[in-house]
Amino acid sequence: MTGAISRLLARLERWGTAAENASLVLLLGSLMILAVGQIVLRTFFDSGLIWADELLRIMVLWIALIASVAAARSKRHLRIDILSHFVPERYTQVPGIIVDGFTSSICGLLAWHSFRFLQITIEMDDTVLVDFPSWIAYGILPVAFFLMCYRFFVLFAKGMVDIFSAKKVPEAAK
Image 1 (tube, rainbow, N blue to C red):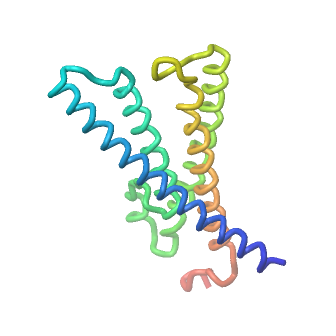
Image 2 (image 1 turned 30 degrees about the vertical axis):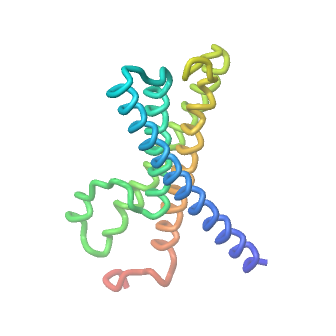
C-alpha cells in the first residue's frame, strides 16, 4: 500500500514540476512577445494596446509567484544563513528547521489573507484589464502561498524527523 502511495506522490510531484516549468516558460515567452509588441506599436505606430501594461504587471506577478513555488520545491529559495555559522557543528541543521517552520507559518498566513483579499474583490466586483474580474487575475496569490506553506512545512517535518530519528543522532551526542 505504501509503495502505491509513494508512486502516486512521485507522479504528482513530476506533474507539478512539469506544470510549473511549462507555466513559467509560457508566461515568460508571452510576456516578452507582448512587451516587444507594445514597444514596436508605440515607437513606430504611435499607438498601443490599452490593456497591455496592466497585463504585463499581472504576468510579472504570476511569474514571480510560480518561480517562488518552484524555488521552495527545490530548496533554492532566498535564504540568509548567518546563524548556522555560529551554532555548534552537531546542531547546524536546527536553525534551518526553525526557519522552515517559521516560513511555513508566514506563507500560511499570507495564503489566508490573500484568500480574504480575493473574497473582497469578488464582493466589490473589482475589475482589471478594462473589464476582466480581478479575482481571476489575482487568484494565483492564495494558491502560490498555500503551496509554499505546504512545501516549507514538509521541509520542517522532514527536518524534525531527521533530528528525532535514532539513525541521525550526531556522534558527539552519543
